[in-house]
Image (tube, rainbow, N blue to C red; front, side):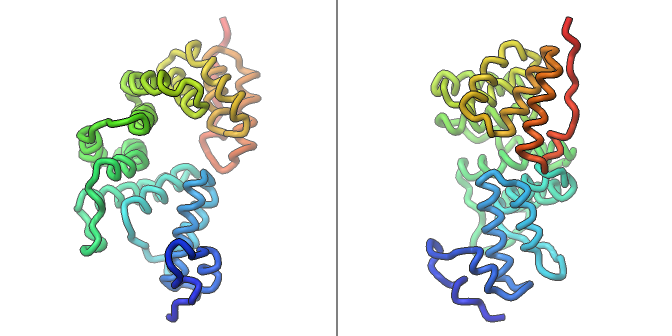
Amino acid sequence: MTTPPSCQLPMGQINYRTCANAAPAGSPARSWALINLGSQAFVEGDMAQAARLYDEARPGDRQEVYSDPVFHAFRGAAYDHVGRSKEALTDARTSWDILSGARIVDPQNPPPTEGEYRSFVLYFILPILKAGGDPAFVPAFEAYQRISVDGTDALIQRAALLEQLGDFPGALAASEKVMKLRPDDPGLQNNHCYTLVRAERAAEGLAYCEAALASLPEIPQIRHSYASALAALGRCDDAERQMAEARRLDPARPLYQTPLTCKTAS
């Protein structure tokens, strides 16, 4: 198949949508362009669109597409977000296999070995591997633990990941450090609130959720965290109103369709 000129421009000049529209159906060029569009949607937080584009990128015969660890981590996380847990686990396992060297996709371009790169990939795949009960979780988590934490961004990532893995003491230790450095960051306020809720310390977390919501009222994760805190404190009607907003803002995420367990106020 001939590759369209729009797909052959220098990397910084390519419009992936134009390339995808010009490339023949089922061609490698079209698949490549759609994967890049899917990854753009993922980075922008539109997981439903990312999943749709990753699906569209599959060849016409539905055979598997193998790429680098980041692609499989992104696609797995997008599928996980929209409730496609089996496919998410397959991608997470593939990402780890490539990252660890168990699967060789491109012998001329092995994945980077730098801790920052590996930490970035593992952040997305470790929760999926653990939730799926995959044996790869143990060596993957051991690899993550060997990566040194250096800098605020690394601490933020570690706090968020350990919360997802259920290590609340470890998550809070990292979160408390970054909150001292960036106390007015609404994203960090939200994460700290939700970690406190998960650690059964919702009363301490509520103010952080309220501060995050005041800054970013249109972020569904914040609505969900706030709803979780309210439910843990027995404010059931308020919690349901916040969950309704989370569902409205992100209707594709199954997590927001799951009813919260609300404690009866004493």
